[in-house]
Image (tube, rainbow, N blue to C red; front, side, top):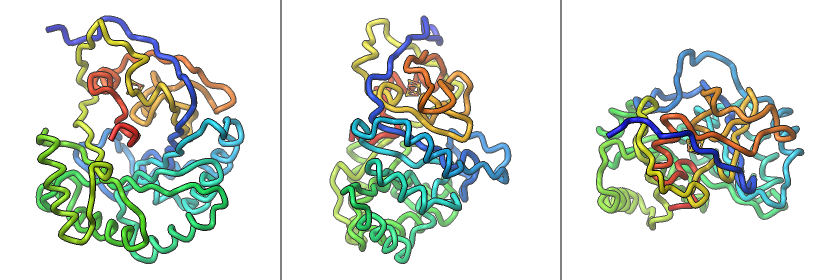
Length: 285
Ligand code: SF4
């Protein structure tokens, strides 16, 4: 079997329905073994300025926008996190991709208030990173104490009527039905009754592995993030969060000037396509 894509396919953005905002590329309170981010230096103060977010949001068609995602590294470490969240809620519902270590009862109560105060009926949705239903296995991947912190955060969120989604990297390639059943039992043990919509299962990706894509693949029918979203970072606009560290993913300087075409040519792209995309969005749950 060849281990290269035959030619780099070109895909077109149809509508800008979702936006990912990389709040910081390098600041995180964990060091997960499988993270796609290359943490060369965690001390860089690379928080996206609120003015840059404001300026970019003013350039997009608000009517077509469905979700704004706040990503990182760890987005809740941004010193202006609350301001940016409030700003984004004026445009659409906001999805926070977090390890939830900064969420306790007080923070959950505050976030409930922030959601209720926005006059646009937009929601705050949490995607909480947790990778295994057994504490020891999870903490071996994500760091000691991370399992308990994620569980405590979920308890605080459900206390204030949020319905968190667990974002699970399926590190050990466990059967998905079994994985969900085990997580459902775990959540029930602390009074969180879940359904399938509470689980986003993501395959483990290898940034160096190119996989072969079938010649028959119809790219416009795939659920690729680059078909309906772009990622705003401190360095400009990128195709998707996975490619925000790769110049091949750069497509412009701001939302007033960016390319709608993209060549999906990286090893990440080949794996993303082979899994039918939507690695970050919860639309395909
Ligand atoms: S990784 Fe997936 S969503 Fe990102 S640019 Fe490549 S094909 Fe598109």
